[in-house]
Image (cartoon, rainbow, N blue to C red; front, side, top):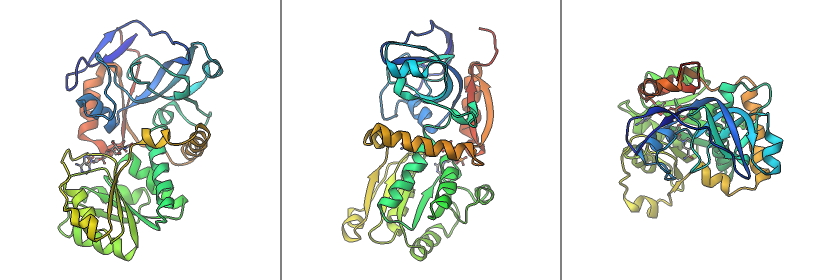
Length: 330
Ligand SMILES: NC(=O)c1ccc[n+]([C@@H]2O[C@H](COP(=O)([O-])OP(=O)(O)OC[C@H]3O[C@@H](n4cnc5c(N)ncnc54)[C@H](OP(=O)(O)O)[C@@H]3O)[C@@H](O)[C@H]2O)c1
């Protein structure tokens, strides 16, 4: 099969011909249809992702496909022949390949109303957006704030906040992104590059009683969120898109009763029962089979991986870049 390969963190990517892997007990073999490029894949390629993979690495954290073979075990046998959303198992290679072996628990059958393209993006961003709504409820929030809001996750959150009667303050980087979010139905949108950003955020957060701030940017932006958020607020850091470290005065936390926490979907779902997670996945599937779709900018054959990464890195807010096995010769 053809597979995208990286030999060590930070290295260039190549497409190799390698043997199709065999599923072991409790595993299935998925013939991949589509796989997105997510910021977490870029972290994986840089060697800064939460889990450290083995090398040579087949990247790709999530995707969609068909279960074509199953190892020993009931769940795998039940999944055989099904069109599924899937995530990779550590040590078993990722979704940027024609075939992937993964745990039978990491494949979720797709309803006929969810396309292969949308299904390939089901298990990371929609589940994270759903988790943010649960956290908002846990914090009794009436208003939450999210940055890097022109992202796929940010746009999904706009929809889920509306469904759940939550007010959302969106922070985008550039003023040109405000139009994008208006089209996605957002009401409160601030651009962090505008001169009055800090003042506007402080005013809006205070007026709308925001107490929960989701931060994908890190660095200076986290410092601003902690500074201007109302006393008693919590800032939840869930990515480091700026690649900057956070430099904060502990007195902000001590004297204003503010908290800085981390969020990682893998740990969040691991803290829930299988039944709770299945219930969440079902409600996310309902959202994706309705009018809410994740925007896709372009699809590329695996062979064009470096071009695909270039397109994604320079146009992230345009929509997701998808990879597929395509019809190119080996
Ligand atoms: N912790 C977790 O478990 C978890 C789970 C899911 C997602 N995430 C994180 O959630 C974020 C969104 O993911 P996604 O897949 O929805 O992203 P996406 O659709 O690929 O979009 C990324 C967005 O981030 C913006 N961005 C990039 N660098 C930025 C910076 N330095 N400052 C402000 N904005 C910046 C981009 O804007 P431009 O177009 O202007 O570059 C774009 O709008 C990612 O950081 C991802 O790692 C975390």
